[in-house]
Length: 362
Image (cartoon, rainbow, N blue to C red; front, side, top):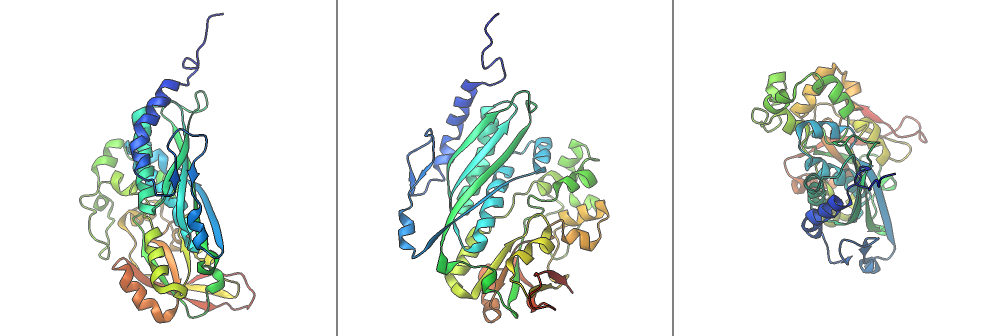
């Protein structure tokens, strides 16, 4: 029997070496002083010396992926933005308890390794880490010939952060009368893309994705800065998830205990995420129409003929992060956040004192 090499079986070790060389600069650009060593070790090393400054340090971790948004990235040929998505989906989760993201690791599964492609994806991941203020200290690139098509890939990752227990925010701080402030999303972020593809993009050609703009579908909003005439569908649909780490940590630094809780609005929309930041016996009352819905989300809602109720539990609807604050400092919080923040509701007492929290609309 003639020799069958690993490369002939579908795994190219040499291309893997080239891929590592191609990402070194991007990865090193994310390093913080706590990073120990360099690429190539069996584990990522990160100094915990900074935790000594905390009275009761709590480690916080989060893991996620990008989901079927990757299918659009493959069609469009833009793979850097989903790298930012990957980091944002994890870092935005852990910051909601007040944790500062420390480091990130990624996992890339591919049908076949291509160094230039990996460099594009990891370049996006590195950019996301820089936006989140964390270090990319390791990862894995795994070829899966026979399991995935040569051009197929998937992403996942996890982030670890830390917060002093006394500085943690969460449901235990929330009370009746608190104000809910919404921070604008950059678009669809990384949720709802199975519906986006089925109702909106599956019927469009690749050329239409690259040439048509949102006004071609009647999507416009007087309350959102008008870039819809120059932004193609591909650009709007692949806009990376906004990173909220520096916004929220900046508020906690300025206002301390007056920042009570936060919710990252992801899959399930406002309806299924804001209640996770509430204690029993309290509900969130959200005022419809108090913020602008991005044109790209309007276009998908229209294409899918979604009811408002269904849309609110599917998409972020233009609010990527909801922050619950002491009512007396709400105006100051808005001033620090800037024009893309708005009061969207308040915390009210539930009908039954011990009932599970829920989101209501008015």
